[in-house]
Length: 226
Image (tube, rainbow, N blue to C red; front, side, top):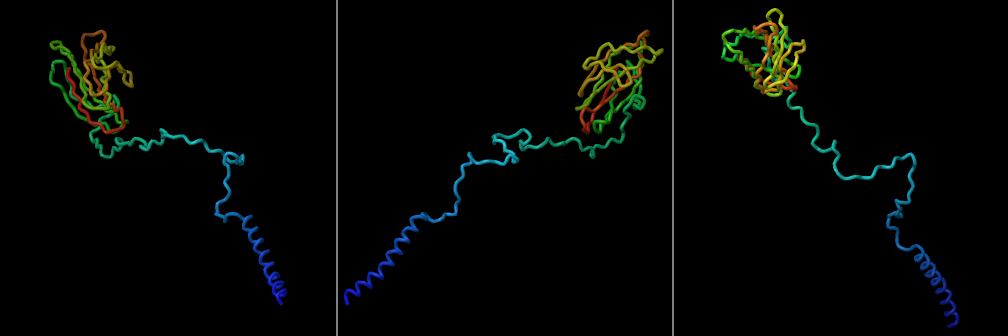
């Protein structure tokens, strides 16, 4: 009876031992549990499809066109608030006629105007008489900014040729129709010396031109005496 119990007990324990060995072997082959993270890839050895462009290397700094400030605002080009109801003509034939003057008149004639944008040129005309008893001493002035101030001369006696000898405070320049004169950037004061060839009479038509250099609304004051 003891031999039978020992034999039966051995038969029962043997399969259990075999199962334990099998489970131990499986655990050693599987290792640590799956973490869910794939195998690391060495980027330096990976390949890229030839049709896919390679991105440029990153460079620090800020590009000039991406400085964050954007384009300069165009703050002076809104001309809706720039009324100019008494706008004079912009050419010599359409110039506004001003009172005549002479070299005996020591009082400066004064006028005020507005240029409404870059295309708005203002022109004025006065007739100058040369009195033999007085001395010619011109002073032409324009108060304002972003403006070009010019004075052009046309001798009237016997179609005499006009010669501009000097432009105190300005530079010699011809008008669009070829009249000789002087120009300066405002604010400006010019003392022009001109001569009518073949005569001692300097009687002349004098054209004043005020032309803007920026597309803005500009107010000005023009004064002249001879």
